[in-house]
Amino acid sequence: MPVSTETSYYLLLADIQGSTRLDAESLARLTDRLARALSELSHRYSGVLALPLRQQYGDEVAALLHHPTHTYAIADGIREAAYPTALRYVVTYGRVGQSTNQIPLLGGPIFKNAQALMQALKRQRAASRWDIGPPFERQLLQALSDMIDALSGNLTNYRRQVWRLLREELSQQDAAARLAKKPQSVSRAASQGNILALTRGERALESVLQQLASVGDRG
Image (tube, rainbow, N blue to C red):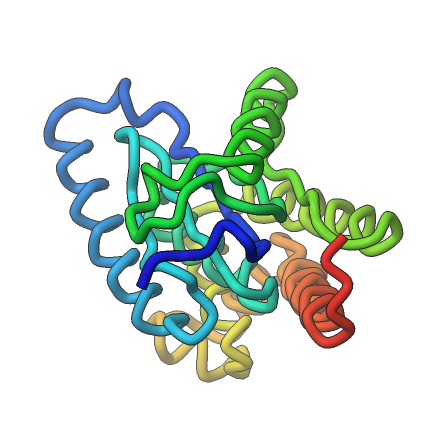
């Protein structure tokens, strides 16, 4: 069903950094991982997505949502699919320019604003920009996102695996069993990677998004 030009939506616009510099084999693997992830995310979050997730213009992914609750989870899913290629993303709010079910054809103020924010991110070499909610919530979302981006961006592959398991609320012992490692190894990785702070930051960010959705203040 086409989206409406009379309704405001949330837009997540993600850019896969440096994808055009990948060799053909690496690009094919990335494209395959991304296609599977977008299909799975579209199914999981179908209740909040105005349209299924769509890759456009080669290295961009757009998600149009009715409310912001799962915006970070979707961005994180795209980031995980793109890894180890880095991802930058923006989240904004507004209206589309055309009533259509084709994301590349929507246009309008929301996409214009998102593209401007993305260009600013590229100049600043930053990872994310949140442009939703009242000023306090917007600043809080940005601060938490900056912390998450900084901590997760410095993780080794092993610490990243530990992060992914512990954020599912597995115990360190269960995570060690899953990774075929000793519990002391997981504990050391969690400590050195600041993974407790990272997962707390993610939960706090998602709480802010839930609050924005519940009070209906979209900024």
